[in-house]
Image (tube, rainbow over all chains, first blue to last red; front, side, top):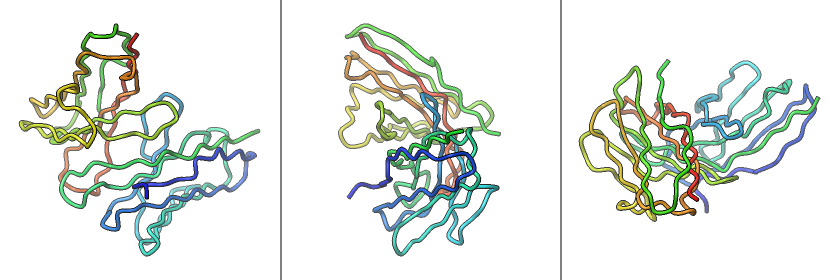
Length: 112
Length: 117
């Protein structure tokens, strides 16, 4: 099983749509979870951290299910500018300065 | 916010030459830096973890003699791709953190696109 698995997409949705991305991770000891956004040929940028209780930031909602080792990202009222690749990210080791493991990403295209 | 600067943004070199990529933390002291590589349509793959003043820890399958990492100060880490070959062509990205907490998100450099001809 891969360390972090995501549906690669692409997801093609109209403006205003709600879209959800899922992600599973294999390391049950992982403690930190993030969603990053990566535009074409650019570096990843942090979108939001994912907390155990779930968290929301504007149109974006992240959920974590530790029992199923599953993370989700929900985007409401999609904008054209949301078109990007969304990376599910978990920490590799459970201590100190730990590197992050990235999923392959899910590509989203929001269409006018 | 915290900024990580990576240089150069892109480089084209001939096969057999060496290329050095610099990663600097501009407004914080980076105790740890990470080097990633990304091939087209692939995920970022961790190459090595670099701690200031000590030897880098390489991930399985990454040749330490080919990818030389130096983290001599708290604000600078360098990756040297030695004797580059076309298969080394990729997007190299560094990231840095100044905190010893696994909950700290990373700050990324803008990446270096390496093309070996």
